[in-house]
Length: 130
Image 1: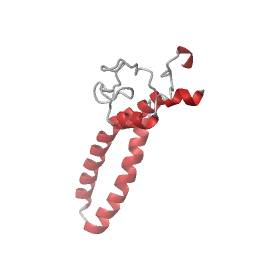
Image 2: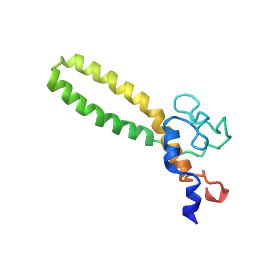
Image 3: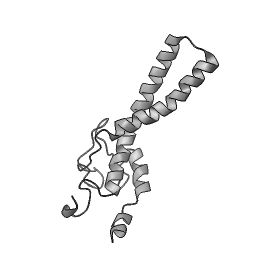
């Protein structure tokens, strides 16, 4: 019975929609009202989104991904081109901040979509699920 309830909200389409910062239910409405503020409801289908509890998850994942991408870039850039320390620091700082700014809202959308798909934190259709 529990498996049948979860099948009506497949996780992979929800994750793809969340990564595009779209409503995990319909995929049309914008999930975010600004940079990181999640809307209370989807403007397209009316799905309630205020239940989310993303907290520090998106920031943690962003740091994890940016660190795993930029550490090899730092090693390769330093060993291959030997730029001056100032040029290397400025370039990598700009790349790190840009990549983090790009990933943060998308990862927040993904986490909200996962919570919606798995009916976590009140996203269930029945008030008793909260």
